[in-house]
Amino acid sequence: MNPHASKSISPLELVKSIIRNRTLIQGLVKREIIGRYRGSFMGLLWSFFNPLLMLAVYTFVFSVVFKARWVGGIGSKTEFAMVLFAGLTAFNLFSEGLLRGPSLILGNANYVKKVIFPLEILPVVVLGSAFFHFLISFAAWLIFYCLLLGAPPLTIFQLPLILLPLVLMSLGLSWLLASLGVFLRDIGQIIGVLTMVLMYVTPIFYPVAALPENYQFLMHLNPLTASIEQVRNAMIFGHPLDWSGWLRQLALGAAVAWLGFAWFQKTRKAFADVV
Image (cartoon, rainbow, N blue to C red):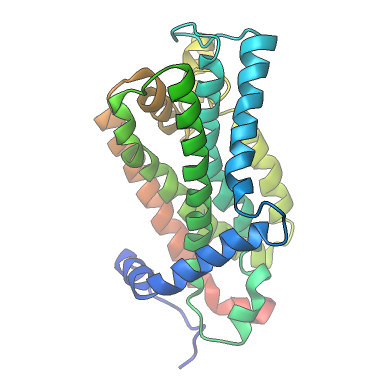
């Protein structure tokens, strides 16, 4: 049987593949995380030290130097930094799949040519590594929040649900870009620039309400806007989840995930000829 023949595009097949290869995924995620810090003196401690340092810098710069205040917030000196870091943490979880996607197949050519390997799990491995670093950043944020502002609102427990559409969109785009990266080698450079632009046109450094009304509708065309705002509402402001908006985001995320997976499955048979 040709291992690179056309594969099923059924979402059920994807779920089965993840379950069937869960031990392999866990091993690859662990290797991915450890490999990033291999050879460094502090090792995995860097994964906690880096977000802690960045949060300290954000807090000093925005609360002390710029004396920034979040529109619609409580006016605390440190609130702006906490709000900014919450949005950035969620965006970084999403963007990891975009930035790593174009090189996933090219960087693992041995899996394509030499062995029968479930290539579809590679974006899942990247997501697993990104989620690990998200948890570390979240822990750093939580420590700072508790020390500076007290206990976070109970709505923070809705965070896993809020992040689900972002995770699905990231997976779908990662599958798409992993395939495109095989055939279009410049896609990685393009995605790097587009991701930077996307970060600034997503309401991370500012709320949508701070924009003129004529431009607010444009911001809502960004599929990340609703999720980033819901992340802030849950982590900082204590607003309950907007279920109707979340369901729309979930449907969009599921559609992007399936389309990206379907494209990957349809094109993977040509990978061995190009890599």
